[in-house]
Image (cartoon, rainbow, N blue to C red):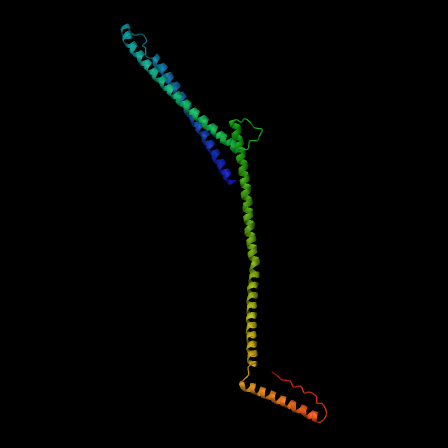
Length: 245
């Protein structure tokens, strides 16, 4: 939207420059017309003042053709100058009208005129362009005010979030440090228990020999008890030996 506003303002600026250019051309044309009118008056005055009041016939016959030829040359030169000025003025006016027509066509494209408007005057288009520019400026001011409010609200929410995250972040760091300490203590205790279990299951070669010898002697005693019970005529109860491993 800002791009369209800038483009529209540039076109309006061009139109204003064209209007000032037209005013300048009109002033120059007015000055040229005044100059031509003054030249014509001067020529007429010079032509009327060339003849003496009562010249002698000889002087009249000798000087009149020269004065007449000089006046004719002067009048012909002024007519040529006026013709050149007129052609220049017509060319400038033609260019001015073409430039003004182009600016008005561009202005019709930029201004929302409505479907009911078929013909427009230059003054009407300029008034509508002025009103449209005021509307765009008002919309731009409202948008800028709304943007500033949103930026202030964003800064407030950001500060509030930082305030809320401060205690939570410290608590989280403290809990993480406590959890890491507990986990390290557990890992140390588990490591010690594993070392104790491994040490309790280790035996020397002498203990293994004693255990095997004791087991063999216990089996022999059990066999002798069974044979004695059978000789005496009663069945001996089976003796259960528990072995600790």
